[in-house]
Structure formats: C-alpha cells, structure tokens
Length: 134
Image 1 (tube, rainbow, N blue to C red):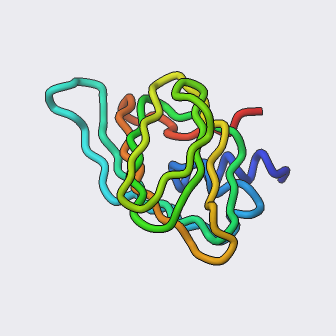
Image 2 (image 1 turned 180 degrees about the vertical axis):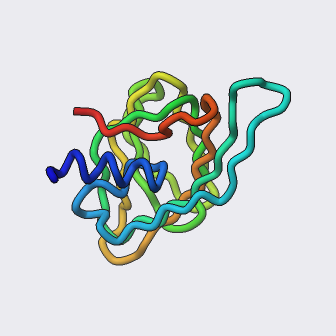
C-alpha cells in the first residue's frame, strides 16, 4: 500500500487531512459531534478536535464546504488561498476557510509544545471533509 492509499484510508477514518503527513504520526483527530442541519436539507455541521504534536505540518489540502477554526491551545500557522498570506493564530483566535479554497499552510508553530484546534465544518451530508492535494 502506498502513502497516498494510507492517507486516503486515514482521511476516511479521521475526517481531517492533517494526520497524513509524516510529522503528524502522533496527531489525534476526533470527531466531537456531527449533526444534519434540519433547516438546510443536505448539509451537516461537524466539529473535529485536532491536536498537533510539536513542529507538526500538514500537506496542502482542501475541505468539503466551509470551515471555521478556533485555536484551543498553542499557536498554529495557517494560510488559505482565499484569505491572504500565512498568519499565526494563538489560543482564543479563529480563522475561516471558505468553500472551494485550498489550505496551503497548516502547522504547529512550536517545536516543543502541542497545539489543539476545533474545526467546525459545514458541508454536504456524508462528504469527505478533507482531501490531500496532489
């Protein structure tokens, strides 16, 4: 099995692409909750908690639908194709990834401390939430 096949399998299980880079071997992604939106037929909201180990980086990827991210702890650097240059976000700060955009940079700033985010997805029911770009 090649690395892309392994990543695809991990994506199906984790619903978040950052776990697929070698630096993320110890990352933990956990779906906190997922619900269909009764007032928006065909759409769901899914909250995923992701913990990045020190120095972890993810490959370029994109998400189904839109994503609102809240940094729970630590600091992450993020760059999205639709929202401008890379920026460091600290605990308590948020950033948004609009539908159709590419997540160009996603990394833990610290080489010694983990970082944790809450990613809230609004996407089609049953969508693969994260896809690694080739």
